[in-house]
Image (cartoon, rainbow, N blue to C red; front, side):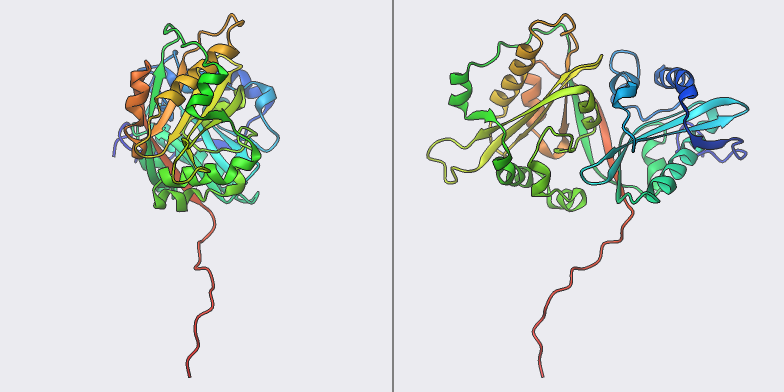
Length: 357
C-alpha cells in the first residue's frame, strides 16, 4: 500500500515519539497546522471541510488559549527536534465523550504512520481518563477513513457541508409577528421532550443507538452539550449559540410536537457563522433557514466583521434538506464521513422472563 492512498505506509518504522504538547510548541503547531491545509504540501489532515485558506480546518478550529479547556488534550509527534504531527481532541463534559478535531502530519510517506501513532496514543491516554466514546469527522480521502477503521472506529454516516458566501446579503430578520405565524420561538428547558421526539423522528434507529441521545441532552441546548451532533459542532465553542423550534400548526394531530429546529451560531472568531436545522419528513424547512439567517443578520448588524459567510451541515439521511439550503444561497462544498469508537462493551439489558415448571 502506498502512503498516499491508505491510512498507513509499509515503509520503514517511523522514528520519533508522541508526547503531550507544551506551551512552547504553540508557534510550531500553528505552522504545522497551516502547512497541512496547503495543497501539494505532502502533508495530510482530516480535510474538514475543505483544504485551503478560505475555510480550512485550522481556520475553523483554530485554538485561542481561552477556548482550550483543562480536560482537552493536544498531542504532538516529535522527531529530531522537529514537530511533524499533531492531534487535538476535545471533551464534551456533559457526557464524557471526546471528539478528534484535528489530525495533521507531514513527512510524505511517513505521514500515515505518524497519524496512526498519534491516534493510538490518544486512545490509550484518554481511555485511562474514563472516556466512553470517541468521535471524528473527516473527508474520505488520503486514507482518513481507513486509518480510523484500523484503530477500531466504525463508520456510521455522512454529512454534506454547505456554505453561503460572505458576499451574499443576509435576509432581513423576521418580525416577531412573522416568526409567530410560522410557529417559531426560542427553545426552553420544557421543550426537551418535544426536541428529542423530533430528533428521533429524523434520525434512523441504528444512528440513534450509536449516538445514544437522551432527553436530558436537550434540556439546555446551546449550553455546551453537543446536540444535535454534527461534523462542525466544535466550532460552536467560538460562537454565541441560540436555538429555536417550530411548533406544530393549529389543528395538528399533536399540538405539542415540534416540526422543526434551528441552531444558530454567531461567530465570535474568524470563522463562518453556523446553522443546523432539523425538520420532520415532509415539512418545509425554508422558513427555519430564512429565520436563522435573519438572526445572524440581526446579531451582526453593528459589527464590522459580519462578512464571515454561513456554514451548515446536513446529514445525507436528512435529504432533501440540502436542497432547501441551496434555495437560500448555499452550495455544497464537501461531504464528510462520521466515525465513532466505543470503549465500553454493550451487553444485553437483564429482564424478567416467565418461569415454567
